[in-house]
Image (cartoon, rainbow, N blue to C red; front, side, top):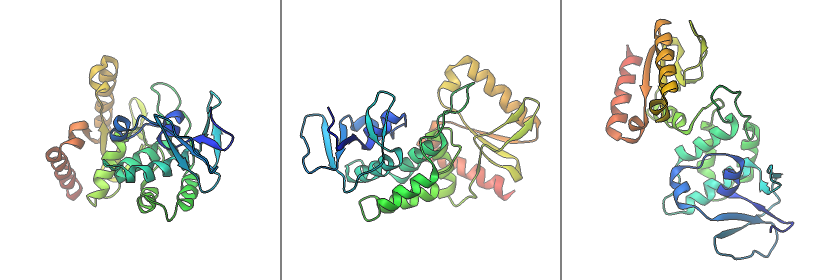
Amino acid sequence: MLGPDQAVSHSTALVLSGAPLPSALERADADLHISSTGSRRKRRDGVISHRLDATPSIILTEDGIPIVAPATAWCQLAEYGAQRAHRLGLEEIVSVGDFLISGRVVPDEPRIPPLCTEQELRTAVRAHAGRRGALMLSEAKRLVRVGVDSPQETRLRLLFVFADFPEPVIGFPVETRLGLLHPDLSYPELRIAFEYEGDHHRTDDVQWRRDFERVRALQEAGWTIIRVNKDDLNDPIRSRALLRQVRTLLAA
């Protein structure tokens, strides 16, 4: 039972909000995080207690559980991740931030609204100044983008950005015989698009056929389509090969 000065926080608050956690933290951090503005913190197995220096914005989940606002939980995630042995990287913090301001994509349904705004992230980062993880949050704030569909799409975008390529456009509308299509990432002026395809694109027969027709329609519209999977992001050799291919296309 939470006291009047307590709220669920950190990664636990993000999970209750529906945000995806970085895989490293998801495997390692099974504890319940509770923050308090009071001087007394209860110590219990499976619970990590935190002290809040100031009263944050508190919201209620659909089940009536008080949690810190998503923007604050994002800053807490960076602070806590910086203290752990596995350490969360900039890429992982940005991917969570992208989700918070983009919302969740549901097939054949409207996008689920975002959990916070860019302004709320900026305000939370300013309030976090001087704390552990503040420098990474400042850089992450500069890199988060609206309209991102998945953490892997964030990783692909940052792969190009960190290689000093022009930043690709997210979800650029392309007129095709199927109507308007929105590739994950693209360089519109060069008609080059990138589509990230997770395992469900391979195992779901309906999704596979839809992808096949989607790529064909984009190609018929005069676009070069580069399909990317998790190996292209996880294997350094394949990542370098992808960057060489894109560098050649950009130079041409």
